[in-house]
Image (cartoon, rainbow, N blue to C red; front, side, top):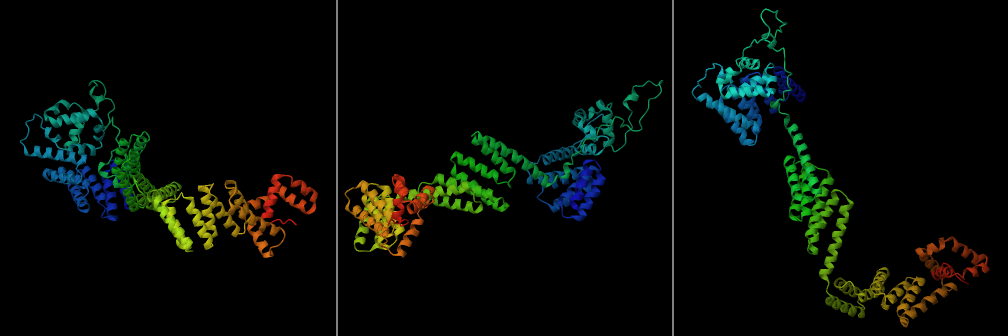
Length: 575
């Protein structure tokens, strides 16, 4: 309700209906008696009607309610000038400038008040014009703006220039008295209604009939300009909107400079945007991005911390806070020189993901963790200490202290992760401990590091044999023999696998064991592909129903290999 009445008051003031504006502002004050803006606006309306005592009362109330608001002192100063209290006006303007040193309205008001005070103290100027002094003082402009007959003249540069000339030298008033506008202004200044002739009437001879006269001297009436109620306080809200708009323009200029890699200019624009609007953290994160590109990582981190802190105060979008944290993490990664330096970066990325799970942030986190791990390995790498730990592991293995042996082998791998012998030895320990999947993984890593190292194949084949994957164990032993054809351990492994496969084919194993092998085989993707192949399914049907056709199939090497695979796994039995 108060805002509605205030809006109506502003509209009335803009239209020059000051008494109506006062009514609306008074109505708003009755609803919101502690709103300083309403008293300020009513003070301006009273001043426009030359009711300076009422204007002063409202201005004092404004300052009382909001002593840190500079515009209240502007109202106070204007009211004092209207009452001729120039010293009090000067004091009010100075107080306002203490709060807002760059306020142009206060500076101008102070200059007018000081000028008026100086004239009031000095001797009266010698002037041939008895009306010269009435044009002195800043209140003249308020009177001219308030009177509808002279308000339009203020939009005419030549009229404004005339008045300024008379203010400087009152003797020049006689030069302009033939101008009807000056006469009208003189009437307003003297608070009397001047009767002026129409310019057309002055040019008609007396003998001729008088042309049609207009009752008022406003026959050629200037269109009234839309009066902006400077005092109407477009409210702090309006000012904030204007500042936000300017801040966005600065941001756009900063973005353009950033794209051109003109980083110094971009920083200037983003900084200006931050000064204009401190409620948009994108200005801060954008400046942080510039610092990041320039390699000024400390400044980037400071801006990111500021953005996070301010964003949480304003309850900004989680994505914006996450972006600031991600940018900080990136700067920390750039500064990292050792594995420990990655810890704060990783922590920052994790915080960013709790704000908003972004794929780019997740990738940066994974990269930072990998880089940290790689650096740790490089910092920890020491082949000499690795050999010492391997020897300790060997001693424990001989003493059948397998858990201790695993511990030493693991430490050796941390010191030198590229030694296939350590993986082979640890695989043997895992086999003894019954941790077959872990042992298989170590054996495969051993072969990956050195494909010619026969121990890797014996370890892997043995583990597969214990897991009753005889067909896979056979393939592993045969692959090892390609690199070491005379290795007795590999040859023994082949023999054991063939015996087990043949025993299965002859039906010399228990149904439970056969079923267990078949279940394991069915989990093998290669076996699944063979059984789902339409051609192989037809081959298996022919083995049961058409032996002659089956013999023809066996001439195909690929089919023969797949049949052997099924036989080795226990899926197919040859009798």
